[in-house]
Amino acid sequence: MNDLKLSVRELEITDHEKIVDYFLNSDQDFLVGMGVDVKKFPSKNEWLMILADDFYLSIEQKKFYFIIW
Image (cartoon, rainbow, N blue to C red; front, side, top):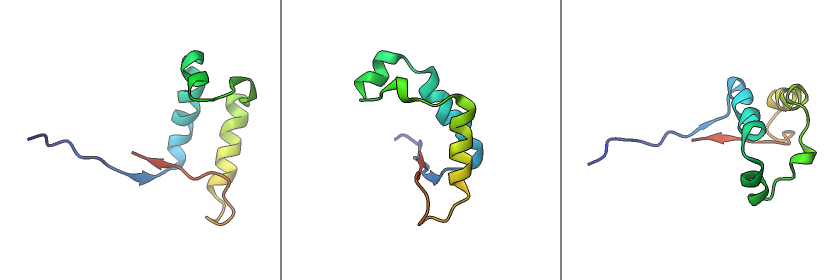
């Protein structure tokens, strides 16, 4: 039997750079296949600021909500 377990948690502020890097460093064909328009990406710093500003809002005011698994 496999002892691996799935862990699920809310996003932590330290996850932001990993999320942005995932998209910025992914293969463009892969992203297009998911329906992503890479021309609409903000710069890395801009994206990180957007996520950080949203992170501190109440749940009702958030534009983004991430679950990490």
